Length: 334
Image (cartoon, rainbow, N blue to C red; front, side):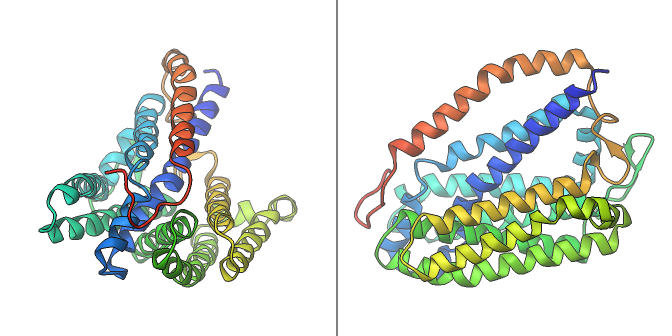
């Protein structure tokens, strides 16, 4: 097996997952913040700030899941039954969120049920993603490259904490996005909310950073052996710096930089988790090479991705550029 092909695919899938977390994270976060106002025009403004982007943002989830199925079929065959319940919960919640996004406008003035579906679907989807993340971090029971655990192995205090942390993190992204993209009362309230949520996000990052090495010696060895500590100390330092800068910018009159620094926190945390677990794709025992497809499959699909990925990136950049600028209370894209 060409050793580099699984590495390339691991980077591609990791990039797709990270793009999904950041891009769909902020529009899920806006829905999580929906109950913080009852004003109809403010809710409209919040939804309109992501109306041109939300469905395109989910493209990266499809690429990440499809890429896992094609490039690492053994991992896919283990992860899906191990997390069947939270995965189904996440997909159903995303469907409800998407349907609510479209139906809310046509159902006015009797649209309260769709307001609830928009909030509940997004919150449940975020929480389910946290459950899956926590379940992978704590490890999956595997025997002979097959899932050998129970249907609720993922349900632990650690995964529940991760679920709550992802909800808080997405809400932070959503609040800082509103600071950047809206104006008036919506932006002012979002700036206040973002300060509190940012503290919660940083607390979650510290808790995970302390919990995982304590519970898993392999992660502690990765981070705290003297040679690795010299190389990896910039990651927590940079995360703390980005948190400080986001807080400082939120206290000022800055609009885009709080959102940018919050994204940086997510990127650094994601890289930290990758460093903790590499090369294991199904912790604690199966690496990217153990779960990889045949090299011919990797090459065949990689040819298609080579053409399609630049098109997706171009389309995404084009949409964000086209709909740049502030979303006013009396304007929308619906």
